[in-house]
Length: 412
Ligand SMILES: [Zn+2]
Image (cartoon, rainbow, N blue to C red; front, side, top):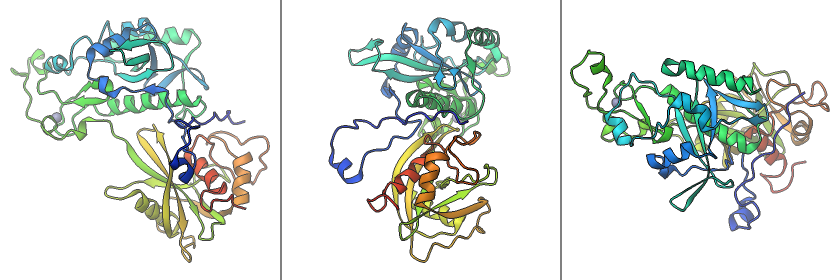
């Protein structure tokens, strides 16, 4: 049996009438978006704020062991308090200003990665400078290593002793939408920090600043002096200190994912990969390439994978996808008359691609959706089309198409 599929997040201000909603329809918020947190990004360099937020009694810490979050169950995250994490992070990693941290940088000293995720304004919590209120959230990597091995192992034992666990498996598609959005932000940032310990311009170790949202290449490093291998802490010049700042910030990689409609608006093209279970199909998808518009990427990917020539392409909605750092840009494209012949030979990525009727897709959306590793629902009949769950943007794109996104009337 598949796990229950959580409701999708509410879009912002769903009940307020607007000219845009009348023209383009209701906004679709996809799973992993819809976070309840105000990120107050401009407060990230403010160490006095971070220090207060860290120690506030209302503050929640989402713990990760490697890339796996602490959960109570597959449908609920677990959070720790400051007193729980204090033995791992120390009394106050934000005690000093960023300027001082950079001056005193020592690449050998290990600091567990902390990320400030934001303030949940719907809950009582910290009040800072009158305007900024709410319960603070942090993500913390407690993977046992280096100087914190012992403290981290003890914390893991403690939380596991209380019945919580670090979830195994890659996807977390059964969390309630708001929890999933908090988890997605945390995972994306922790993963980026873990993968970028060295400067992409000069190769020296980097320091996490801005509460986990930036890595900087300090001009000095005390470690070689302490180890008596150098008589100066000064490092060679690095371009990231003088202008190339895009290497210092977390990356998000755009991918395109698209529902393809036939020229007459009656059929939907879906494809399948070899590793998927039998009868399982989905929309086509691929990476946006450098110097390519979203519309061009959609047309190129569809032609490369299926041989179909697309005309007009419209963006439908988007979905953050923290595995590890993607933004899925969901589009709907319509084939041009005479451009609908399937040809799988250009790029051997797909096992099959096929045109389906609206009826087949509608029925599969009703009875044949589940997570990839799960069995279908009880009403599914063997041999019928199987599709991804509604937590996947592919499902929303197909639902939009059968619901009338293209012609304004539901497909028949
Ligand atoms: Zn550098």
